[in-house]
Image 1 (cartoon, rainbow, N blue to C red):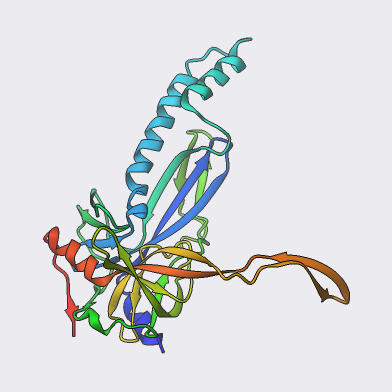
Image 2 (image 1 turned 90 degrees about the vertical axis):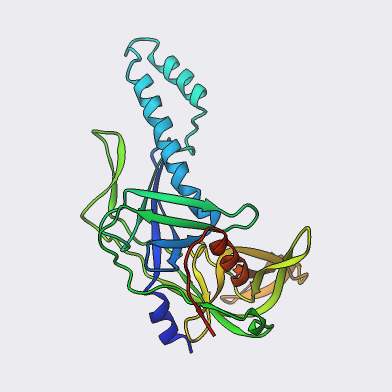
Length: 296
């Protein structure tokens, strides 16, 4: 049902790959999604995804300051205590992220600047990429013109990059920095998930419709990915998943598994995806004077 639509949408949907390193030395890959709305280098994504851009700059700058102070500590009997004091000053624990780097894949030949516009209330953001000479995405989103066609039971699909399989990164021990490499797997596969429209999400103070609820979960890493129909037309953008308690709780329920009796407890939930409504996306683009396309 969505085969051709997925091919169409992937022409302008791209992954954001992130790598982070904790103070304890753990390297973690992460991913998110964004998609382009025109041929001028403008994309939309979630506000919480956009926040990775300034966060990376601040996190890395703070760690550079930490390293500068650490390197001035004399390697004497007081070294360990002084290092512990420095850790307290910077509030560094083993799980604290101290380095973060982002990579916008297969978009442009080069990027010199990204101008970010955050929506004041919704988890929605606009990214304006600048300083490129070549564009590597081959199409752009086309939003539905009349949102009244969005009704309960309508089948729609989302796509993104929820399972980071890329491993083209490392920690450079000499520079004490994380970096991208030219070896390893640089890609992660796209992952679509379909569902039907279940309900609409209204926001205060006027209870206007701002979101679309889907019967299936939006997966981690699909945040910022498009919501589209079988023709590839855009209805919204995935940004969150809600967890609805079903009430079918079981406690010490007896089952037979692998020929043995056992007792289990279970509190089941239904996980539903929440998408920013297409009308709110178009309103925000108009407010920022960003050109976009519509289809009947």
